[in-house]
Length: 265
Image (tube, rainbow, N blue to C red; front, side, top):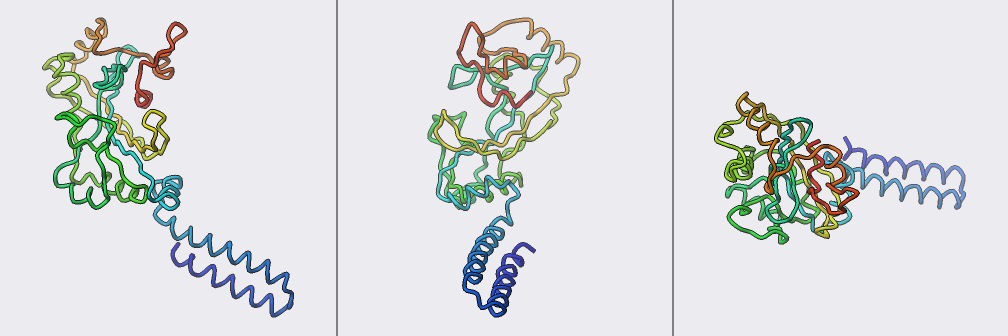
């Protein structure tokens, strides 16, 4: 429908211009009409371009007007683990801050053909090791944004389970016990496709997120309450106000929590 309108509207406008000029013979009217025709043609062109703007106008504008701009992508899942109105955070592997349990999704080897097709680059801001290998923390040109998001939301050739990071960050570090070897997880909400400029990485980013909750067994809930009563340099329980202020207090202006922490509230 949009494609038809993008062709039909300029044609109708041109016919109206011809009729007006024949009726008036006024060149001033002709010039004004031609200017209107130009605006309609440009508008119709953009209308046709926006037919695939399901991920929002802002992203579409980046695709059209900054097609070769490099964009950083890091789709992830984050756990909301809450007890006594506080949220469990763990120490970041690379920075001296706390953040929710979770991390970036990984791609499978079968995704390589697609990723090569969109000219992906491995993100160069994070050291690649056995833990971060095959993370979907990548860079692509803006013209491929919709194509990547279509692929990502198809769940094809990528990780769709949420347990790996839970195990790595809580069980493997002995923060939680084997009582959490099996957990019942629910996707609470998804935060999609906002594009923001990162002052830290000096690049535009898109960071889709899935927020995950756990349905605890009685034993698991008791263990979490015991964990809450302790203190550690490996984890921290923060309330909503602390998180919204990034851990900054009147006594300390140091940022203690990662930017993504606020999304679990």
